[in-house]
Image 1 (cartoon, rainbow, N blue to C red):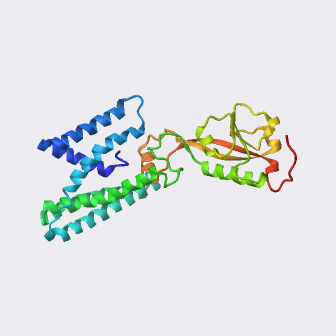
Image 2 (cartoon, rainbow, N blue to C red):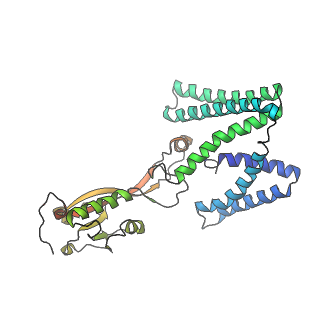
Image 3 (cartoon, rainbow, N blue to C red):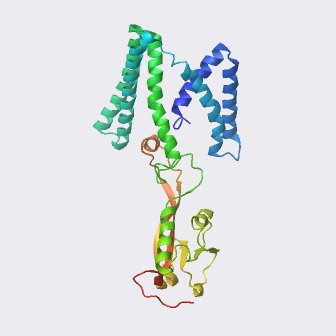
Length: 312
């Protein structure tokens, strides 16, 4: 939640602190809902990552209450607030760029130390700037400008995480919201079978497909427009047009088929333990992954460069 909903987490905790201090029934009810939903996700044995949605509803409700308190800007203070918003946005954007640069810089080098202390300096400058604004203009201007500037930067960051979770970055960039193994090259596999079927049979979906030794409903769904048969062992005498097997060389198939490997199911390996690994995922969405490779075998006579031969 801190990675995908940073703006909501910060604003919601400010709201909870204010609500419990002022004994607000609405905020207390929302905070209890949030904590109960979060504890259920943590302790229920059958928990799924998607169950966090029930905690996000009260989280963003409380964040909205805090955000509304910072949009009522008096006309005489608009210029000052806009200046603080611009300064806050610039400093946080620079902080993010410097933090991203740390991922590419080898630890222990002088450049790494320079970037690290530059990061500390920017954060210190941000705090000092808000204190000077509060002393020179008003605490209200510093508070509203700081919150709105933070809203712009973290809002864009949260939007990027949302788009990534929806798959717009591509399936090669893992997201924590993806609870199941992801078929990485399903579209490529489907297009390959369709093209070869059109070359050899004259129709995109006429050639049947035999899946051998694989338990993958996603694979069957990908090829649902073809006649799909799932078997434990292949009867080579049937000479099917397409055969899909695990990643291994089958001498029987090699003699009469052409094979192409595809990356199929892909899951995070779970070896991400160091802070540097997590920072690389947060900034670049790169994480060690373990995958499953399959081979699509197509009978030789389906290709346009091989003369058609009778087969059983």
